[in-house]
Amino acid sequence: MPTKKISPDKDVKKDHYFQRVYDVTRLIPSGKVSTYGAIADFLALGSARMVGWALNHCHSSDDIIPAHRVVNRLGELSGRLHFATPTLMQERLESEGIEIIDHKVVKMNELFWHPRELEEY
DNA sequence: GACCTGACGCCCC
DNA sequence: AGGGGCGCCAGGT
Image 1: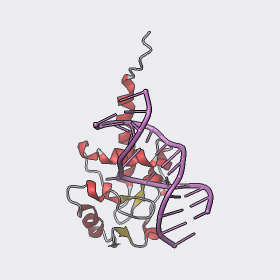
Image 2 (image 1 turned 60 degrees about the horizontal axis):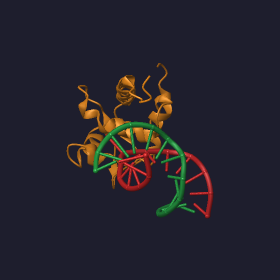
Image 3 (image 1 turned 30 degrees about the vertical axis):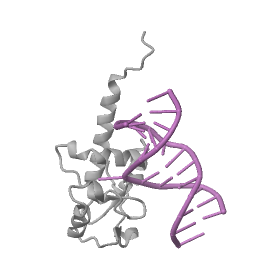
C-alpha cells in the first residue's frame, strides 16, 4: 500500500466544513454580528483562523453569504479588505442599522450574537 | 520540506 | 488596558 497519503475525502471534508461555516453564517440575524471564534466554537471544529479562511472563499459559493456580519472578537471589521471594495463591509452593516466608528462595531456587547442562542439546530 | 503568512483569540504581563 | 507571545491549521513559496 502506498505510504503516500492521497486522501480523496480530504477535499470532501473541506467542502463540508465550508458548508457548515456558511450555514451558521447565514443564521446570523440582520442587525446583529457574530465572531470567527464563536462560529468555530459552535462547530467544535477547526479554529477561528479556519473560519476566516472559509469565509475568504465564500465568493466561490453560489449562495449569498452575509459574511459582513462576522467580525473579530473585538468587533473590528478585520475582513473588510477582502470585499469587493474596502468600504463594502461597513456599508452593509450600516444599512442594517449597525453603527461603526473607526472600523469597529459600536456596542459590540449588545449586538454580538452567538450561534448557541439559536434554540433549534 | 522548512518557513512564512493569514478575514483569530487566549494568556500573560 | 493595550501590546506581545504563542497555538491554531491550511496554503503558498
